[in-house]
Length: 390
Figure (cartoon, one colour):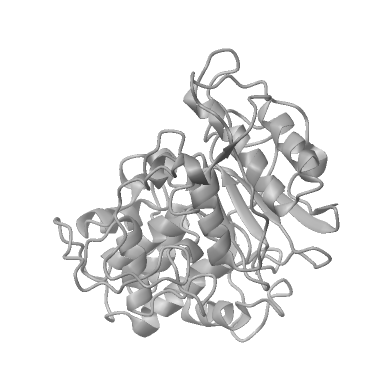
């Protein structure tokens, strides 16, 4: 069901029309009423930044592609630029992006234009429009420092709470645009060819309450010492490299996201407490990323970029299922096996349609598995509470 690597599109997941219809100003969408972005959506409609769908809905939680977000961004300032009448509708927007040196993949790889854009790439693109050149976490720091983003928890702004690897929704897209219009430089500027000086960026904690005196290093986190690690058995049908032992958590879940990140860092070896790379590298090689939510968010959001490397040979990527199992045990200590086996079955090609894109309950926790291109997203709610993805 799930394919092995990033191409994890499962059966028929999303079938949506791309035709947009004009929606009268001053009127609401039924699927936006009561949504956290209701006012922002209306602002975007009134400004002509985005439109609704032919069925009279807005679909605020639907993913946004790179081409769609780029068009929204440019239309916010360049009302004279309209969709191309020949070739691809997005050509005119990518032509503008190329002229301004904006970091968009679809300029040269047309097949990437329709794929969901991540929040990290949005941060890099928005910062570029302000006449600076920042990549990765530095782009996120720039957005925080210039009131262009608030993160998923405005009361605790961290790199992790930005949810960099999560895909962007339509509601989030218009909020980013509104932030830019209200707090940006008033026009779209070109991105410099050379990287910008990072000394003026604010010190933003990576995952907890600590305040840094300098920006975190982009180098991999040091491996935890053996004194902090407990190891288990190689009992899954995935062969790992000789000498590797699966770490086992000895701590239990806490209500403090910062402590949970620290536990993951010290006891599972997760980089900065939120991502796991079998190669010991930066987050761009990660197979897993984790976000610990506050009480008004999912208890946990787990993004699985891939699951295994080889079914028959020893492979470093085969360490991933062992780490996932421990993460699930952290959030569902008594019933994690069910969710683990659902995911394992999916990646091994079995039919798990009954669990996809719909909420189901495990031990009084609502769970949702979504499958956008780029990774499988697993949301785990708080016990006894509705899972709310606002």
